[in-house]
Length: 407
Length: 146
Image (cartoon, rainbow over all chains, first blue to last red; front, side, top):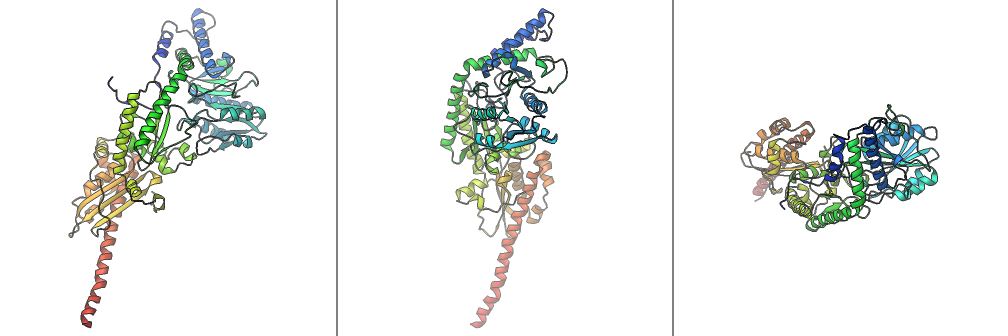
């Protein structure tokens, strides 16, 4: 089979819909178009039944005990906002302190910053060189004013998987709620809200081969029953937590995507892991000074975040433009700051500028991996040949000893 | 980031990549930027006896715009006198390459690289002249002593 360009290796940003997902969605645009909140006729009942089926499938994937615990949203950003702001507002009489980590997604960090402006106090925990939070740090940060801890399941940039189970033991023991932004990890690493003592979990469909624009917040209903103040006023849908007519076709697609993850996830992950290791060993076998960012052990199967020393990330993306990847380089961001996640690991700014994130997924092939590996090896060689830093490195000059004139 | 065709052309086919002998008295070397900022340019010029830039080379660590800016700079200064090269402004590079606002610093860096290379060349030339001037009376004295 001929290789088709461009090649998509940015599965952390989004994923294509699985064709099986689309097939199941289609009837809900046309003949089964009812409003799931219409309780008085067959069109509504049909839609409601489909939505509840989706709740069951999604709940099953994450270990929920009741499908009623799934609250549909527009996506994980909304889920994170609802979980954190909703809990902070509801429990504000109990305390005003929240704990999170410095490597969370902006949907969590900016939500916490907003709460700080409103008078809440937030502790941002650092991470180790491998990108993991030390559960002991969580323990130490909890005070009698702490109402919520929010730690992501797996990081979107470096794929590092957090020790949620250990953190869950601590929060449960201290009677503090635990929220997790589980977007990147669901279906890809073991995740069970019961086993991990999670109370709130944000997930989204488009990171697991479902459609964009639909997500969910799982809200624990018992032991403890978690209460939230809604962000949106309206018809009181989703047990009053999220008003607004449900996007039924997308919800159906989300359910199907979850079911596929449940059934195929393990085999999928084993295959993706093999592809990622093939890519990594080829590249690191052929090139010197290529560093893996994040934990090698506690890592999403599809994540390969590498820093190619002496080569700038954006120039690299331009050189491999037939491959869709992303970079922690400042030049790719509006802020002109390199990745805050890589900085948090203590990766130097120069190596953060040199980072490329390969995100592999369900539809990548071995042939694609081989093509990308060869292309990367060739282009890095080319870019290093025109890098003054590589020349200096080769001459044995310690780049750290040079007095640079920063701009 | 969408680039102009000219940036893509320079980034994909950079002109005058390479290294001149930095110890050659006719060669001026400019090294500007910092790895931590994501761009470092090294631009070198070789100036002939008449003060004309006969060769220019660069190596750049940086994004596509940084590579294109330095590539263009070497292309422009080749054949110019040192004074003409010194007159090149970053705005000229911005206009030629159609750089978006966030990439203007790449053109500034290229201008700095030219100026820094020229300054290095002049410093070497002046040092050489001073050394020659200092050597002359001594030579006379030697003659006298004889």
